[in-house]
Length: 217
Image (tube, rainbow, N blue to C red):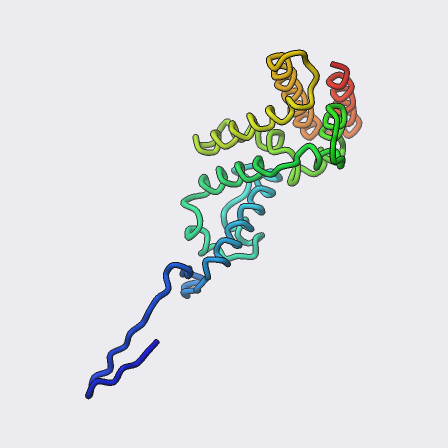
């Protein structure tokens, strides 16, 4: 702020640097957040939402709880996202957009087709949906979501198929795509069922039987 005295009058010039500052309401008080911090907060919310949606479903967690887990106030949400559906669509795209899902599933830098099948259908993956495959965690939920969320889910599925095609055997691209589609359907379906049943032995049996069957194709 700069003050200029002109007789009995004081002219006050205030410059608001709008290109790098945002204002949010925090329990009724205006809070200034730089553009850099705002971007960091947004990324944090997307990461937290991606985890919580996979753990609890799109409709199983609210905006307030997501913001709380991110360490932010509820008031800042609508400065970043138009709606919860907007957040769900962006979080879905973000999860699918992270490279290296096959490496994360297997713990190997250059996994084979069999490694991916076994890694995906492992008890570790089954027991940790929050950091696992979004297809299995939210597949049934996605069918009931708005178009933007379903579009992000569809685009992510296509990306996974393209990546899996690089590993599956087959003499032609059409044959590899067919195998990739069938394999992914088997992986996702088996993981969903293994999480749904309340018999641990049966859950393990589902994973093992499907891994054996898919691995021999």
